[in-house]
Amino acid sequence: MSFRLKKALRAVSFVLVCSLLAEHISYALPEKRVVGGGSWMVDREKGEKLLGFDLPPSIATVEDSYFSSPTTHNPPPTTLVFLLQDPHANFSGQLNLSKVLDILLQRNPAHYVFLEGGSGNESLSFLRKYAPKDKREQIAKQFLRQGKLQGSEYLDLTSNHNTLLYGVEDLSLYFQSLKAYQEVTKKRDKSFRYLERIEQTIKTLKPRLYNPSLLFLDEKRTKYEKNDLSLAQYLEILKTQSPKASSFFNLKLLNKLKKLEDSTHWKNASPKQRHTRLYSHLSKKLNLKALLKELKLLEDQTFKSLLHTKDEETLYNLDKLISLLKKLLNLSLTPEEYEEYQREKRIVDSGSWVVDKEKPTTHHPQPNTHDPSFLLSLTGFL
Image (cartoon, rainbow, N blue to C red; front, side, top):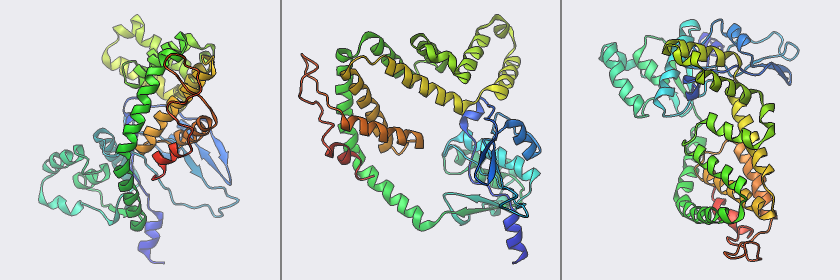
């Protein structure tokens, strides 16, 4: 094996990165859990020990780490790999990516930074000689804002790191994905128009079928999804509707933070003091990922507790299905949402409901979502 190949095998690999949300808050991570022959470590303090330093919480957080088992890997491997995640084409997120890479490369010099969305040598360092650093930063930042450069490319242009950006995409699979995306974009406009008609029908039926408490909560959720209500305000509304709200650790912690912000002590503090206190509090206790899961669980529990009739339940499930379908057509479903989509699809397909304008419990389905061709016609091309 050549020296260069050995060196490449020992290199740190970077793929893309930095949660935009980490720009606003940092959060602690769950305790250690064992998986298979190794162990996944997601404890913040242990993450700092792994790195040998702490990443600034304003740009990134350590989500998890994996250590090989000595029983399955003997001697244990010495390669250290960093896998980074990022919000694509987001200026702030990509700028944070460049900062993270800069810190890691300073402390762990590596010959390669491996990238998705590329193939072979993607380095831009050959352009450094054509302009001074300040000019390169000015121009590169413009392209970064436009989404034409990634954070890794921005760093390559504006730093002196001796690192090769190397794309690791399988081009045949990459172009297959592009072709599949092209097929989706050709047909989804028609599907969206159909979904919007159903959505309007659902909106019309809600005041007729939903009981007052259910209708009130549904309206508040709509405002929250449109950013007309803050997370804290929406949580307060859910708490008034559900006695189970107090059983969620991170939601309780968020409520404490809200009370802290509303306190006189907080209001009299300087902006710097507020920033420091809030970051310190969040970084030690609040788990953002768990918080969002808890909110989703509380929301589902609260809505289901307010469903008193079969028509309410069916309309509620159909409403959720249409929302998930729109995300599916936009290719923005998370894995968890896709599983939820599969569940809701089965629920709606197995149900039977119909609504008449005068008597909302007749036997004439509008729209006929239980026709087997309904979902297939909307999603068969995906």
